[in-house]
Length: 270
Image 1: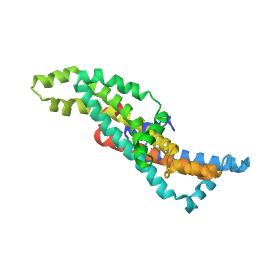
Image 2 (image 1 turned 90 degrees about the horizontal axis):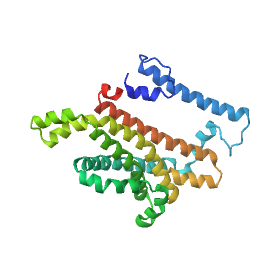
Image 3 (image 1 turned 120 degrees about the vertical axis):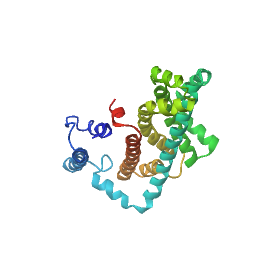
Image 4 (image 1 turned 45 degrees about the horizontal axis):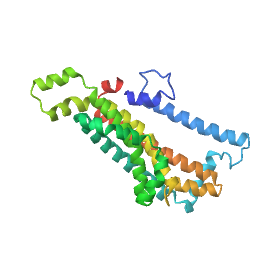
């Protein structure tokens, strides 16, 4: 059982034994979610809650049958914005961290400026991005990237700077090149930090895409939420929220999978 699985199971079922089989943990996690849905359905029916306040899960699921809402195409658009903006943030965030770590002058001159720019609320930048780049998928990807970039940059810089000085001195004493120093020492040691930033950025990626669609868009789940909200189709609003959540969970699971592939179990347990 890996710590990645533990991280998923612990928030829901913190009392599970460490040696419990993986399938049992996943079964319990799924069971908790299903129990929550069943409780939601029961509460709506027992207390006769109006649909425009809190629709039952069965009514939410039934909204998928409305072909006029184009669920598949709108979900595909939001997924493209989330995954493309996130990938761009990861790649450029890591590359920028490498530049800052290798150049103290660059770190001194440029990094404080990036910190200041990151303090600007992205919602406030949204209208400007629309003016500069029109509206559509491209600007929404850019907004998503702007939210994901900085956390990945920070954690990667921290990971690269946490390398033990003795290891660096040893490689230099053995006449190792800068590339060998990075490839065999700094990069493996920084991966736990990189993946920590990537996990945080999964939440921000979903938020960025939806914010962009709220500001100005003619497609996507965020745009769809605004349309159905105007007609008080609350079950469809809930369905859009659930689909957006599913995209975020899928992205997070992919990051966990990559973490298991590239980081040893001992490193993940630290």
